[in-house]
Length: 199
Image 1 (tube, rainbow, N blue to C red):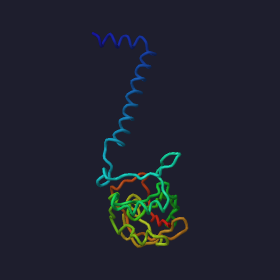
Image 2 (spheres, rainbow, N blue to C red):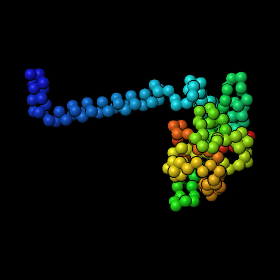
Image 3 (spheres, helix red, strand yellow):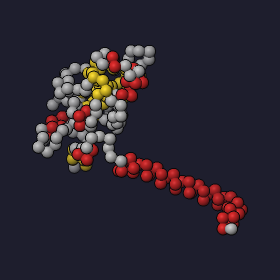
Image 4 (cartoon, one colour):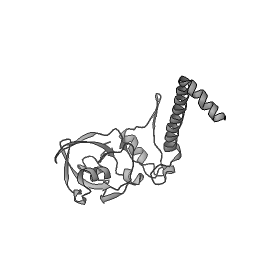
């Protein structure tokens, strides 16, 4: 009887009914969105090995702290082996690179990473290898590691891509490896270039 009475009242005032249903839908939608963000950011562990041991080093200034450092500061952090097991540098801004050759050019997202990056974040090569310390030094060569997504999409998962030269932004780069499927990093780049930080 109560349900019938409620439906009768809602039918008699359609403006109130629409407003009430819209408010409920908006509230449920907002709560779902907020929970999704909280679940992803706070509740789910990072997709890296031993995520509880990974920290972000910040530079502190009178204007505040920010996630950036000079090359000498990065090198000083790398020498702190009694405190830090491994230190990696990466540039999440990264360059936009035009991939030439083939049937059509493509705009790719690239990031610069130090050679420790792959070990620190547990990225394995599906084919080939990742950077060496020598390749990460200034003038260490034009080498790149491809993401698994780009390898599948553009090259049909062809393992023969390793050792081939690609033209990126007018320069020739040699592909030395492809990352295994499942590695995630935000932002997810198409190509990884050595940081080659010059102090």
